[in-house]
Length: 503
Image (cartoon, rainbow, N blue to C red; front, side, top):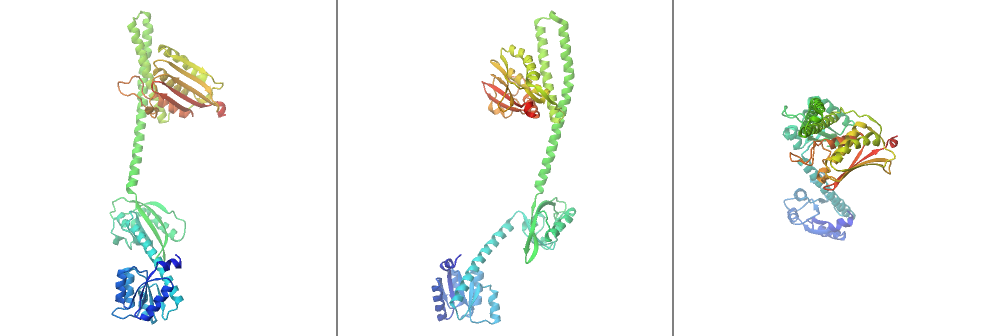
């Protein structure tokens, strides 16, 4: 703030029992462009004016008429109204100066006045007053923050707590008066006291110490668990080096974390047991099921053409249901192996055309023909070599082609193989089937999920096929793109890195 701003804003009260001196002083102040609020010739009048007017500074004579002198009046103005005072005096005896200093004035002007002294003394006093107010505001804000903080705040000197807020005392179960003066380690669990003491000494000695760490606190109720987050740093407190820190009670948070970790471990264990159970049960089902299918085939062959149409249809239905059950069991076993990490991954250089798709097209040609579907395979690729696990690729394309035929009642199912401009290999399985809703697309790869659920669903299935496709695709670094529209059809695109590109 400039001198001109101080003059324009500053209102000054003159307290002087000599009218001549007071008028002379007023003239000086007006020439210096200060605003003179009033002139008082007694301490009592000065106190009254201070109670009614806005005053930035008081020029106070020490020796005044009446029961009260200037020092007593100054003390009232400073303490009750927070008005800074500069004393005017021709007396310089030690006792008077000592009494005056006790009021913490903003300065002294010695009579007789020199205008430059007046100017300098007033400006210094106003600057000091403004600075003091800002310091008081900062102290008030700091005190409010500290006292209202939910975190415990403390200051330690020579291992003793010399300051603490209520939150610090509350965290450890003490009253504030019980905390002050106690040794820091009183609030630290026995097995961590040595570490806390070492950190304190090292910090005081200027060594690099971790600013924030967790410790086990020691509550007044010794049986109560207490975990706190402690952070600390060096400060100067009452002209001596000290450590100021904060403690935050994180017991509830740590217990919640422990519970969450335990719950996750139990969930993982439960999931593992479920997976192992499914795998074991599936193996137990698969062996007798294969026996049933094998013997039903032998019985049918033994009977030959002597059976009537109803019996032939029964064998056909038995075979279809058996294969469906075998497929379900196989998928459960595969999912169990993936989730337990028992699935082998055996990548090799293979041709998508000759090693995978050619055989599958032959396998599904009759199934598509039975539904009167137009079944096409277009090989437009000049390079179809990939580095992948053959079993996994067979499972991916078996599921995709099987679903395409299953969910298409009329129209076509088309498989196309081609190379893209970025040296990738693209395989698309496109159908004109029922399509997939946008809402279900985000769940399509979740195990056991189906768009239709319950006993009234229109199509058979267990919801594992697409989940296996995604997991096998991830194993082989295959990107899957899906586009579908209800009533129009669905397209699955699988994008491979070519074996040549991998080299």
